[in-house]
Amino acid sequence: MKIACISASNTNLAEEKSTSVRVCNMIKDIILKEAKEDIEVEIIALKDYNIKPCILCGACYSNGLCIYDEEFNTLLKALMTVQGMYLVVPHYSPIPSKLLMIFEKVNEITYAGWINDPGYQSPFNNMRVGIIGHGGMVDNEANIKYYHDNLVTPIANTLKALSFHIVQPNSEYQNGVAFGLKDDTCIKKSENSIFPEIIQDWAMIEERIKPLIIEGIREMSDIV
Image (cartoon, rainbow, N blue to C red; front, side, top):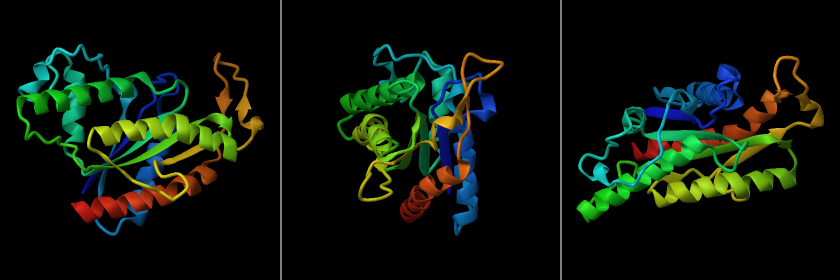
């Protein structure tokens, strides 16, 4: 089985120190430790893809690919080889722009395919996705609910509309998990950047996301 861990961050300055990328690596480590079968994990950072916006030309109906965007096609083909995904999304904007462009293009491909063939079925039909949102607010009940309602849930609703199946980590937050910073001392002024240095509580993050990862492995294994 093959699983993709997608970092939706577009913060090139952070490079591999990006929280989203580091969480993807954490997910990979959890999978390799917890899985009872051989699983290949591919980490995909959207910052590495120069994706273009959809112009709604409809040309994708013929083969399900974008005639104007080979980088998107490369990403799409990679995602079509996996049996499940984990999506790690930072909240530095409502939803990061590259992720929105991917949603827009997959929606257009699905719609164009259905218009051309009423029996069309998305290649992502019923694919399991675990969603993890994070941001720079203190990790308390009110802020976690904010991330869930304003980041995780809109992404989950979009994915459901595109035929994906959302992994539910618990009964309280059914669309995914979220985390913030341990406290206000975790934001420190940087000497080398206009952006502050962010100190994450990695043990807390692992504890928060681990149930979602394990449930995702179970669901993905059941449908392979």
